[in-house]
Image 1 (tube, rainbow, N blue to C red):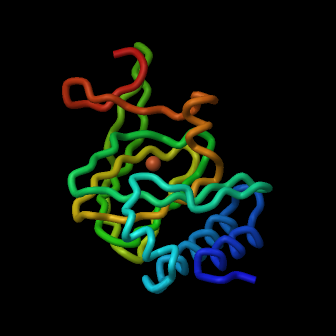
Image 2 (cartoon, helix red, strand yellow):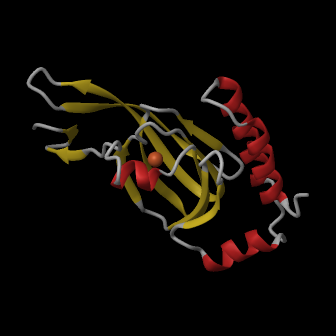
Length: 181
Ligand SMILES: [Fe+2]
C-alpha cells in the first residue's frame, strides 16, 4: 500500500507500464501530474524543499528500469540542446519556471548537422513536458529556485556515459551544431 503521493504515483506508473505507446506516455503523464499535487506537508517533499538537491534519485524500478529524479535549479541555469538517446523523458515542474525550447536536427551536406529552433514554452508549477526518442531540447531556469521532477524511461546517465547514445550540441558562430563543423 502506498504511504504517500510519491509511492502512489510510482505504483500507478508500474501498473500502466509497457513498451512506448501513446497510452503509456499518457498514463505516466497523469501520474506525474498527480505527483505535482502532493501536499508539501508530505515528508519526502518537504525534505526536498529543504535540501534543494542539484540531482537526487527518488526511485529506480528494479523490473522496468525507469528512474525518477528530482532537480533543483537556480535562475539562469542553462542546459544546452541535447537528446535522450533511445530514452523518453517527462519533466514535471513542482516550483519555479523553466523555459524549454525544441529543435529539429538538419543534416549538412558535408557531414555534421545543425539545429533549427522550433519554439519554446515556459513550464510552470503543475505542468509537465514530454520528450520522446529523437526529440531535442534545451532548458533555461527563468524563475528560481526551481524544483522539478524528471522521469526517465531508462537510466539516462548510462545511456549517455556507457552507451554513448546521447547527443549534445555545441554552439559555433551562433549555430548549434554536432559532428563536423
Ligand atoms: Fe533533457
